[in-house]
Length: 227
Image 1 (cartoon, rainbow, N blue to C red):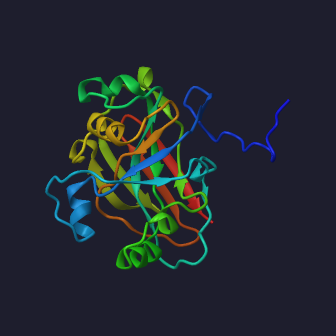
Image 2: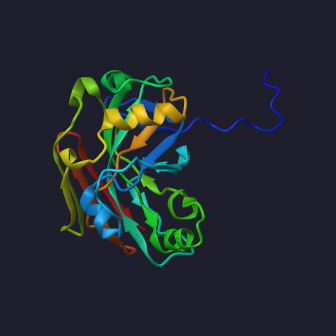
Image 3: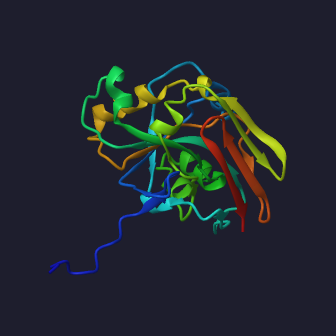
């Protein structure tokens, strides 16, 4: 019999390509990991130490709908590779990092850009612009045995059929093994942790009624309607 003083929250899960579910423990998001996106956000694209922010596990949403959030009039799309870990640890060597990956998916880091901008100006954390309800639309995670470890491949996001973002996984400044290794120096990674691996240039605003179609070559396509 449980002795918790309130009902225990459910473990949040996202779908997998084989019809199963992947339990999510933590969500790490890397910032400005494509040079062209760093430039469009007003930063130097030269390789510098990576930085991460977090979303909450239950921000990840596989419903195919993105509810336009309150208190914002400038909500942007960011298409990203999603990396799901099956194991973890601390101080993981780069050459062993991919051993910890269960699979990959397509995701969107939806951002209340106006609120994020206000937070930046005041030197405050970004969560109000990044970690709101259903701010991480996701498609199914596909196992490494199915898709391998994609280190190149066309990345594109269309809104109502018009290309908005376009790039290639090989343009990531920090590659997946490096991200895992770096994070493991500061956090104890565990099974169920996921990483959103950064977005190419072309981020822009969406409106209610828009349909976003995000595709990562060799990984999959995610279609999400703004409601």
